[in-house]
Amino acid sequence: MPELSQESERGRALPPFGLAEVTGPSMVPTLHHGDRLLLRYGAPVRPGGIVVLRHPFQQDLLVVKRAVERREGGWWVLGDNPYAGGDSTDYGVVPEELILGRAWLRYRPPAGRRSPLAVVRWALSAARPLLSDRSAARRFRAR
Image (cartoon, rainbow, N blue to C red; front, side):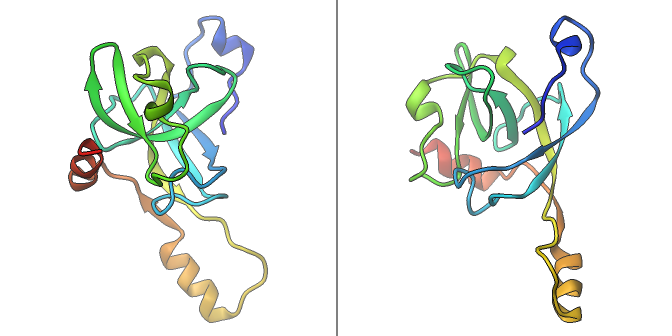
């Protein structure tokens, strides 16, 4: 996950873009352990968008979740994997100030040595934009 310097914590502006690494299964099948994300700090949050936020109870822990809907007091966020937990079903609405940015691009790093055909397949699927999916947002709202 992205680390923020103490200078940015003291009021300096964050850089507009950053990188994060996904750990854990909470966003499977959209994101997998080891995926890298290109983030835009301060980007407007939209329902269905993937965001990086500070955990409401452990603010030194950064988490990646899908913003489902705006509610009184902030955003309701859920992981794409309903069995992993660790989302608003556990800690409620996330205040707006804890949301750091929105993920724009997912990048899968190459996994070791591969055959030439596997390298071509990886190159064609390694980077994918992360768009707000309205169908996913509707599906998560129903939970």
